[in-house]
Image 1 (tube, helix red, strand yellow):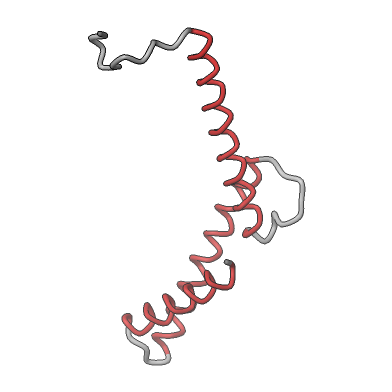
Image 2 (image 1 turned 90 degrees about the vertical axis):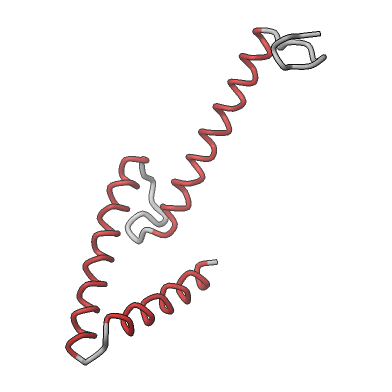
Length: 104
C-alpha cells in the first residue's frame, strides 16, 4: 500500500506526467484563444479583422472606457431630466439585460 494517499493506483511515469502536462497546457491555450475570439466578436473595432491578442486587449480597454464615458453622459442627462440615481440604475440594468439577451 502506498503512503502517499494514492491508494492502489500505480504512480505515473515521467512520460505520462509530461504528456498530462502537455495536454493541460494545450487546453489552457485553447481556452485563452477562445476567450480572445469571444472578445474580438463583441468589440466593434476587432470584428472580422486579423489581430493579435495585444491588439484585442488594447481595443477592449478603449471600448470599455468609451462605454463608461457614455454611461456617465447618460447618467448626467437622466439627472437633468429629473430621474433619480435608483431610476437610472434600474433603467441601465434593464437595458444591459436586453442587450445581453440579444447577444446570446
